[in-house]
Image (cartoon, rainbow, N blue to C red):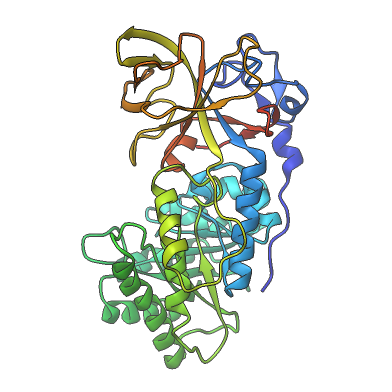
Length: 434
């Protein structure tokens, strides 16, 4: 199994930041991405405008190392979903910890990967439309060619890919590698039956310019581990059937893959039940593990720790992504308003959780844990409504750090996030590409 090389971080650090970018200080000089590390900025010293999104450097590194150890111990490889962060700096951390590929969802995300040197990309979607399909085939050729996987869930979709291969014949030895996507009733894309899946696999195997690479699913929308098991079992069963039919034409390992952020234990446990007649590559596509969160994925990880039969590495996943805001007003008893809203923090999978607070007047050596009874009850575009118990110490000018749920929809609100050390000193700017 060939891993992929580290990324072209020098070209990323050389990019110039617009001084008006959210998260940069007012009147900031023109800086490159790489210049930010040397500015000496500190969140707690008030050097950054709030709200601001920060990532705890020690925690994100520990999360990456934990997942690397988990996959190694359980005969998996990881192709982390790049759409979670869209930050090549963080892609590079994941690659340094052994990522087999980076997963993308759109052609634009594929191009970001290619631009900074990701050599293997799994596009966890079926490309449709000439623009997207032609881009996939063009990415297979030239000096910056990548090894590209994509999905298909219908004969009509495969026909579109075949026509794309006719317009843009791929080079010998680098076909467009296609995974049959298994789905479920009421879910997103994905073929709904095993009969349809094997028919689709036969069509891909016979198509010029395409190569049947394996089978995959996204089980994250299913409500329980048991329902996820059924879909993951479909993936393994169909790969075994296709192997027995001789549909895989190259000697590359057959890919079986699942999403795995909420149910990554079940992915391993179900794949372990099947004996394959030749090597398979078991690919986990988790993305949210890297920063984790304080609500949904925290609950999912708690379930995994309590239920799994697998041996887990020491330690665990911890939330690394925080959004900090200022107390702006306490206009009435029991309610505090802060300078953070829907444009700054995710709210689709749970409202933010106040974790800690800090008064930047020299009276506190470090942030203190938030006292019980403080709860976010609403977000407006730019305001946060915090229920505040009697006796709360908060007052205008104080800083509050929030944990989030669903990292994807916090990252996409920031074109720059700040990587910070244990004392909240900025060590790097993390550029995103949404």
